[in-house]
Image 1 (cartoon, helix red, strand yellow):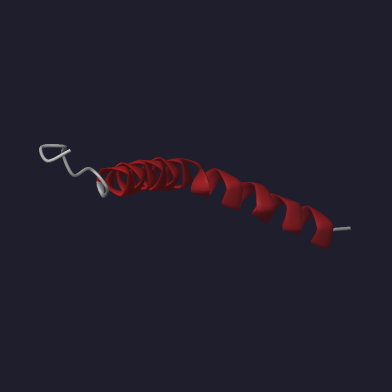
Image 2 (cartoon, one colour):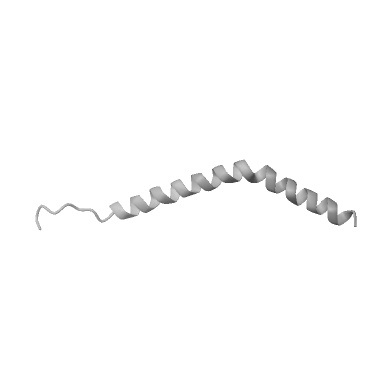
Length: 51
């Protein structure tokens, strides 16, 4: 037990890296699909206002 490595914080760092990776993927998807979603809502509002 004297030479056992101290790895208590390792799990926290791994979870933080996974969280950062997921956040980057979500941001990339929003940047790619953001204008498309905006156009859909604009078309929907225009359609509903014309009725």
